[in-house]
Figure 1 (cartoon, rainbow, N blue to C red):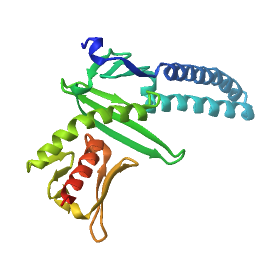
Figure 2: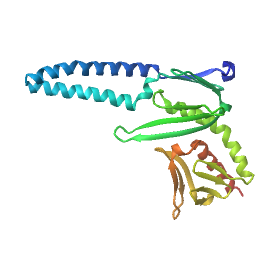
Figure 3: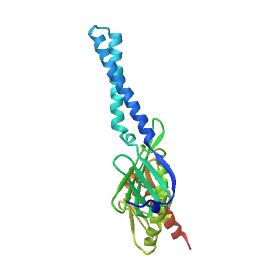
Figure 4: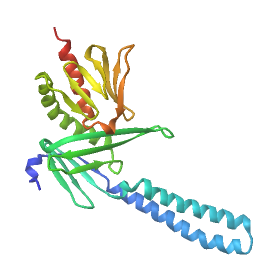
Length: 246
């Protein structure tokens, strides 16, 4: 455990408990409604009053199905975790225990953001790895998880990019997920783009894309396959600028 003074002052709290409480209440109401309608459906179906029995049965099945869907798809919302950003790190508390780490003790952040077409909402998740092997997964059980994840990713990026840049300047090759970066360009699965043809490196809709000039093929992969995707884009920008210097 890390003494509180090493984390510094609290900056912002992300409290998932209210959402968890609301979800439990919703599940309880829907479950109660389903249980209440089943006896009604049985009684009316027995006397062949189909106009009442069938709708009651269908509604009960709908509520039960909704409860099952929520339990299967939205389980993270039931955890009720609280994440607090501090000036020097972050702390997480909730069911199953807690964890506390300084920024220097975090080694990797994997970002995943996938847009849900029906409501055009992006579902964000972040996987954070600490040097002691702790793996912390942040999803939509945490309110404003995108802001939280980006804040953590920025802290980790600020620490690892200088280290990777120094390695590239020394002539080494840096691997980040399926990509490799060196002074000559960026490569993935044997396909290589020299820096002069790299237009932009971005993260969008769950993808990390190295955009190439006309006549060249873009390099892309899902963001969840690129640990420190934000750091990868920053490193590419800096190495590309470095190679453009006279």
